[in-house]
Image 1 (cartoon, rainbow, N blue to C red):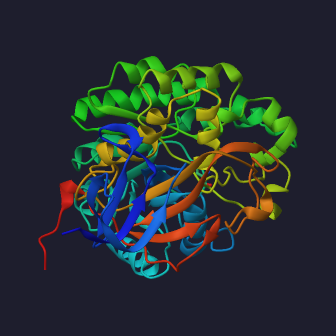
Image 2: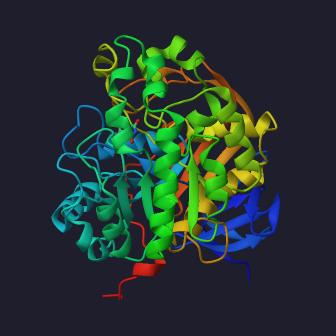
Amino acid sequence: MSETFDLLIRNGIAATPNGIAEADIGVRGGRIAAIGALGSAKAVETIDAKGLHVLPGIIDTQVHFREPGNEHKEDLETGSRAAVLGGVTAVFEMPNTNPPTTTRAAIEDKLARAKNRMHCDYAFYVGATPANAGALGELERLPGVCGVKAFLGSSTGTLLLSHPHDILTALKSGTRRMSVHSEDEDRLNARKDLRVTGDPRSHPLWRDVETARASTERVLNLAREAGRRLHVLHVTTEEELPLLAAARDYATVETTPQHLTLAAPECYERLGTYAQMNPPIRESRHREALWKAVNEGLVDVIGSDHAPHTRGEKDKTYPDTPSGMPGVQTLATILLDHVNAGRMSLERFVDLTSAGAARLFGIAGKGRIALGFDADFTVVDLKKKRRIENSWIASRCGWTPFDGMETTGWPVMTIIRGRTVMRDHALTAAGQGEAMRFIETLQPSP
Ligand code: DOR
């Protein structure tokens, strides 16, 4: 008797634990139920993926969706709409909202807002502060929480955990991998005068290499002292890489598509404050060092650091302009373009955008195309050429630093737990995103 599935993806080139090769995939109840040659199988819905690559759903582990408090920039609906249009099936959302996500009530509020509104699956970060540092061990275990995020230097919003004593308290108060924005607050304050009014090229001079290096060195030492796993978000300097390479037993590394694609001073000359972010885009020697780190396996994940601000805010005069740029919708095509240009393999892309996230954070049932895993797929046309345009951007900010760039390699379908939510760059179903579960904090079934 032939098998019956809810969904059958036929003839695609699938990235499975066996490698990248032609395989049909059968889905039942939102999970992967069969992989292989499923010639005689029947299904309620069949997708012919001939000529397309079927990749594990992309998990973007760093997005700022601004809700609550800054919905004029983005909200959970618009941000997650941008995510699925860009091939992203799940996101970790950042805590620098207003109010910041630092309490149980704030987490529960975000989870309530996300329900039936987010188009992709989600988890939320808890923000670390001197006031809640001792309570983070409890907060990080709440359902729907991916972990703790600490801003060691100030950026957008009010969150800050800069004193070594407080950082150590936070590191000692919990066991999950803790994520950090690593810039040294004292050095940032001491160098504020280096900002040149009207000239965003001074942004990476103010927030210089040493600001990042010194902070990363210190937090690595503190994490070792605390015996705590650490994740260093958006690493941007060549100088941090040997420190991180010496800490592979407990520290992991993220970089972003923009730091792998743009470089100073050209990006500031062309994009002005639209290229301003923290930590900054730096000269090309850092970009080349990050590529080497990607290919040597030092980088574990690529997150977009999707951080939208409105044009009105970005059009003010530097340094009165906010730092950050959108990226969740462009992450896949920017990186696939790099794959096509030979800068990394497709296998590496898969690891950096799905398996890596699952491995680092222990996401239950996601991150690979394997039997029993969630049926999350980013279906990709590796040869498709298309121009990235502001008009395509679903984020409320309505712009992208990559406007006008033609890229090769595009997500053409986003499938979440067996439901096709994006096809040919259009939404095909309303949001039914769910909170992700984590193996370290699994709840007893009700
Ligand atoms: O450039 C940035 N923007 N870096 C951050 O750390 C925060 C982000 C934002 O939320 O705007």
